[in-house]
Length: 287
Image (cartoon, rainbow, N blue to C red):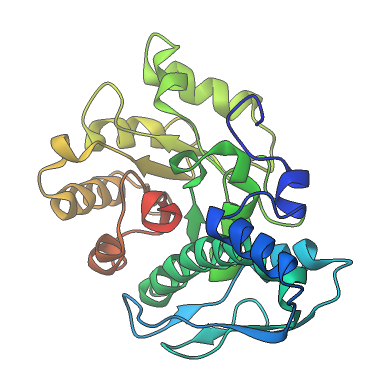
């Protein structure tokens, strides 16, 4: 085991991260000198929604690299339906049977994340979506999470360990704002010190209500205000968003956009995509 109770690549590659009954099966078959030619086919008997998105194939191919098996699969990002085969693996059973646990784990986890992202993408009305969900899972699999979310259709990801080529995006945490005496000091410091390529999205709910902080942030260089208030303080989120939008427009800040995050669900995206400019999605994708 690793320092953080993770399994090493070598252990997985050697087929040692598996269900115990596969080890016993292998031992009995080896004793009886049986190793039939078989085809393993993976399907989903049911899905939470009418369709899902296939993902995780890259890890399966890496797992079987060098083994005498044939893999036939959908391309990653393909939509599939219940009982539709997504991958077939052919070979001698003892050559790959113990890898079933890893194969299903790779596919189920990555496909679940890609599917969640895709369903939210489908209802977002063209609004930008960003994956903020790696903190909802073990950090050892952050790259997989962000890759699957990207395949599912997000516009960017937040984790610094995301695979190369994906836009890594983010705003600022509440802790950053709280390190200063007042929000304006934090916003101005961010505006001054952050790389010019980073959008000036200011977090606006740390010390005061969203409307007040949003108006103040707009005078400190904000290109957008981020609302991330815990749900216990929100009340009617639509009313809050509409009030922030009205106040920004009334004070001449029509160009300042609204970015919503903090426990945002698919239902929230449907409800607010007419009044929010972009969404940061965490657990609704990664979990």
